[in-house]
Image (cartoon, rainbow, N blue to C red):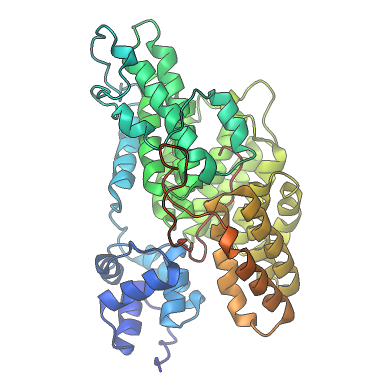
Length: 472
């Protein structure tokens, strides 16, 4: 039996090490237990070592699973993590290569917004525009690699965005990759006069491809696409679109348990785009900041960001927002505020806006419904939480969105302390029945439009995913 942790607050690194040693486990054993519990096979012993040495502080994503594996209250780990962030030196940003590359590129863009981050294409040769498999030239990905997994046939960008309102990333990520490959090839083969327009089209296509990949559970692919989108938008001289790209990437990092990286990207996006952005985009970016700070344990900063977003606008002004922000309105902004309020432990104020937004599409209903269920659990209303979570689970099946399942993992863990209640038993039975129909995260479908090979569904850990709008 694991000895009880000390009553006094302490830093997270020593606490994890103490709990691990009390069980007689190595760092490798902790990593293996976390991988088995979460269904995410990529966590290594080195990451556990970084946590214990205070080089990195795990976000809510892994804190929840650490609580499960080490059999301690999650509040104990959360309090230790908050104390670590306040007292310990800030961790060096690292992580995955695409994450580190995007963070570095974001800082470069903010330091010099006018820099051309995407080099010009090589001189066009005869027939070059028809060669879909050749290298794309300096600074651009290989077209064949970008479009791998795409489906044959053209697809208009606006049509693909509207499809995203109805269908999840598990079905659309391949189309997004294919559309991005077409945009890359068009830019490589273009003349000087068409280059500004095609740069914007590339940025728009890459942002959407990143959003669809994130919705499909392919975080690395999404970050690669967002990096290309930022380079294209910056080179085209569109800071508003560049800010939207970084805001989308911030949303992704918040959803995979990296609030520190999410906060860097959200603040960079707002600082670089606010002068050229309309009120709707400014409010959206402030909500990205609010969510990241709330998930990172910075309650005061989160409240300030929410207040700033509220002052910016109650709803976007018609005609002032770009076409790619068509989905943003007052209802969506209010739901974003509600999601952050739940993360701040203020669920009662979040109830009405989260209920209102669930009248929209199945993915929106699933994601915000999971946040609403979490809020009801904070209030002790277990039966209501189970009812809402059950509806969200069925909406996740309808949506075909792996990301929509993430926050439900947090709800499931929080229900563990109410196992004998009838409502909890009914929800678990529903979850078991729905399991074969849940969308599986991963890269886009294969070249023929079929699914990637079936595998074990990676279970998003507690606090893993966040709410989203149709095209983010």
